[in-house]
Image (cartoon, rainbow, N blue to C red; front, side, top):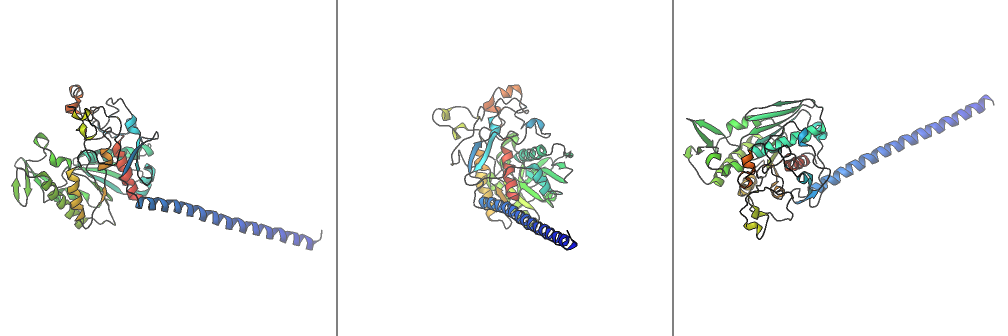
Length: 388
């Protein structure tokens, strides 16, 4: 073969190689573009789905892949919420997933949350229902990163759990009324017009979630104040819903004046319902029973109508939020939680004595929630509202 033939053969093979490389390059770009389009399409479909969906109306679906964590492996659950540790014999209450009526919500992924929130702060502010949700969230995240370095700082009114590898901190600030309480000459004064002391801790937080409602109606030994201060005048008592509204409007003014929603994501948790009255979920002879607790309940309710009496505190909250310039996202968990008569600690709580456990009608906790359990869904819905 002469030199000319060899050169022509080499040139032909070279051109073929160039053609194949160009084809591969174009094909790869097309495949990559198609993959991105599919991902964006899926995301846009999810976003559109959620935009047109009421996250808070739906039903509870039994799901064997739940719960998202085991209470025995979570480092932070209060004995008051740790139902499995304190002898609850059934486990089906752990297996229910919330399904909105016309959309799907993403499964909570703790690692995804930490990556998205790297270097940021989350704070729950409110009463023990906020603490219930705070502990749930730490358990949900911890289950995804069991080997992550963490640090717990316990205090009053604020406690903080830090995921050191990601620079993420999740705090709980205890203030059942949101507004300030001052001690004056040995008396607790509930300042309906003042929130200065509490609010100093809330500035600069990236995600704030508030709750209040239950403590405003407590009386006797459970009442958290001796006098209410309104406009410089002291009251031994007043209509509790009026007091709640004045306190919430003080909080709302502070939010409107101090929170930049382009910097801070703001949530308010709807009033968590209680289940002390079986007539809310039974009929006939059962509703006439003298029983007055959630003891023995093992399955959720069904239906689309609100069972029992809708909390008056929710109407007050909604009225205040309508007047705000900078309202939070309402995490409206009241209806979906009302369906979960089965999810309370009842007598399976470390806070009860054996004598109290023997008398569930008078001692069962039908206000708080077991962990793992219902507050995990509250956090899943907050995660959905944050990122999807």
